[in-house]
Length: 535
Image (tube, rainbow, N blue to C red; front, side, top):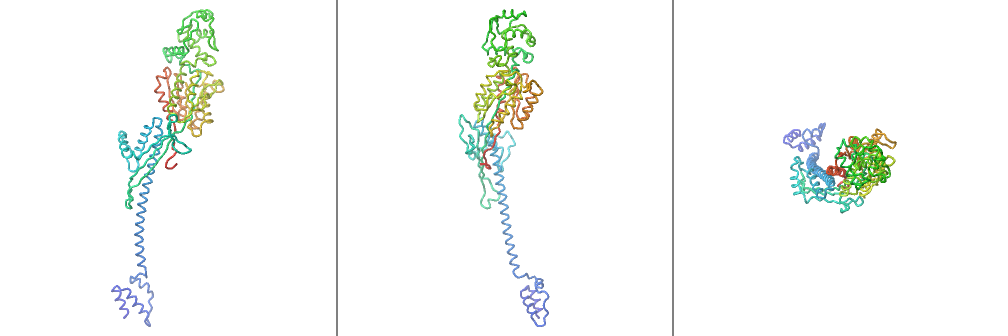
């Protein structure tokens, strides 16, 4: 029967034959139709028409997709590594350019060596970070052996219009540095499968330090003579003070009036006419606009500090100079005192000379101005506007004396004048800073004598400078300096305080002072003006 044929075909694994028999069976007269031929065929293990072919195609497509995904994964890993290496090189070159530019004031070779050191300290790819500082020179030598031809370092001056480095000159030394670095032969992880075994990266950066607008603020109060006066014997010693008074006499041309010599002579009488006669001053005019022989004689007889120093009733150039310094210090009173080595005002002048010398050697479009305190009105005075003519600040400072305009000390007024000048006339792209030289004892405001209000004004001005981003570098000079306040001003504004003690010549402290101004000169913010992200 057909049924037996169907069973035999199924046992033989011939589903197609069994299916044909099943169709014939259904077509016989009186046969009962199969309830679900399709289901029956599925039970026989037969797939629908074309299903097997589609299943094979999916398997092939899946295999191809897996290969493609593996390739994309390998490519993404290599691409990510390339971006990582490029980022490492960009950061290393940016850092090296900034570091090298910061060394330009020491010369091109120093800048080049700084660039190399920063590239060594910031390895690219699988390079090792420096862990042993004693090996840095060896690592630099090895790095140069491998990469010297890949590194280019150029110096010059940045032109923001052309966005190019312009050649440096003697009158306009280099203030910008360009670093260009190539790394070739960097290995890929999977690229070699596609024939790309290595890749190259390149980066460059240009860094420059900003031109600065600097206002130097100096103290011209009468207290800037204090270290040369007899009242300072207890602090500085007799030998130091008397030697300074002798030097002042020499600076003034070793003047002689009547029978007076430098070393005072004792005259016991209190009679002013007899004293003048004994000194041969009866027909000798008093040499300056303010003061008199009678006032000088009275001063030597009755002044507390003169008596304490052992010079009561002792008349001579030593006590006359002390009279000028203590009683008649203003330029309108004794106009020749600017020529003399009075302390600590002489230290201020010498310090400004050192500063200007350094600026002239390392100028990069900097400007310097000069403010003083006090003016004749008891506030700050702008003596030299911001200029590239540094000698103007030098000569103006040299021509000043302690108490030049006013006898009291208004440090806050000087800071205010400097701050306002920087705000009004500072260049938009410049870095603005203040150098404050003082004996640090403030006692005057625009309203008059008031030490507590004067101190409050100094701190208020320091806070304003802080808000504007103007660091104040303070240099306190003389034995009576208020070092704590100068520290506070420097700390508030992000500057530095340097103290030059009294009783010593600036020549003895020249190295320390030079180092102080080196640090001030080094306080020049560096900035990147071009790199891989900003052309």
